[in-house]
Image (cartoon, rainbow, N blue to C red; front, side):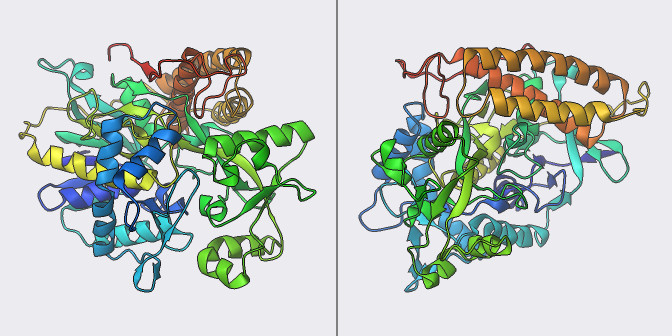
Length: 525
């Protein structure tokens, strides 16, 4: 079956839904998402959205905080573009009905690590969930937007792959319909990848199961460059409990005075950085990792119990309730925490309109590398980036001349069979995530990266053989993408012979000059 639209959007997080709403008045839009529309990472974001909204704050200050966190690798033009469009993005969300937390009738602004001022607009401690609920409700009522849930991206379709004459461009995509196990063809002159990051490449992550790097891998296979893939942000404070699956303890807990402590109650962050708990995430994550390994600890403690119960109920109701379910009373007890893979700072290279190297293909949100995050993302800049670049991409698509529909063949699976066993997929998935955690984690060495690269080469051969001979499944597609992303992360890390931001190497512990992005160029697609 073939579907025709003006714009295809892969992903239903804040980036994808924002783009859909901006495009819907003038374009026929398809939003393709591999699980339900609410299952992306955006809904998991707790902290908030950074924007200069308070007296005494300034765009220059927000830009400077972003540049400091990015350790010299942020693109200044991209950073200023995002920061200056932040107030408008917040206003757009408020107009849609997002119920931001207020104080005396004004937006309540909190502060997070790396920020020099209170500039985080939030909905208590569940900002992402509130924003997503609002956008989903609006999208479902918006004519011109068609949702395709339970549809997994297989690959984007390019003119070169089809052997068509003329310039190379994106013509659409193939997607697996989980309900029928049929690969469908989607045609459109413009496609936006908004598939999120790749946290599931690691054993421990705060990300949902959907974060398998699908857009990054598909864009790479289509001939797009990727940048800065070595910079994986590990959130310092993931709840450590056998019955909690990757539950994030918001940055705002430290922003509101939460203290990191050893089991004996001793604070340790001042031994690592003068900013203590308000240091950027990479500094805090490495400090926790150091203390855990030095002392043989399973976790450290995050203590916010000095705040009043009323304060905690008002500011962190969801964290308080989740911890209470597990027998932790945060009004009197510290929270056990460990670092976990959280955010992919690199991705598909784009310009300030979200355009990739492939005409007709855009990337927005965590899938993209816009230059905003550099070597480390400043807290609460990610949801902001989603909205600003979604609007920019929509404007660029609106200004683009109409492209004639190309003849795109249907997916051909006539020469493959059903897999006789799927243990290869489950085994390889587990192996990949474990060695990426062990060898390509918070602290890296040349030897560890070599070991990871060797295992990735073996996995790629096995997975490609499986992909070529058997019908595709969602598990196979996700594993194929994760192994491709793992390869990009390791290759990027091997090229960076220094320690900067989120990439820390024991073999190259110092920062080198000049600062330079890591850009990988794919073979001709």
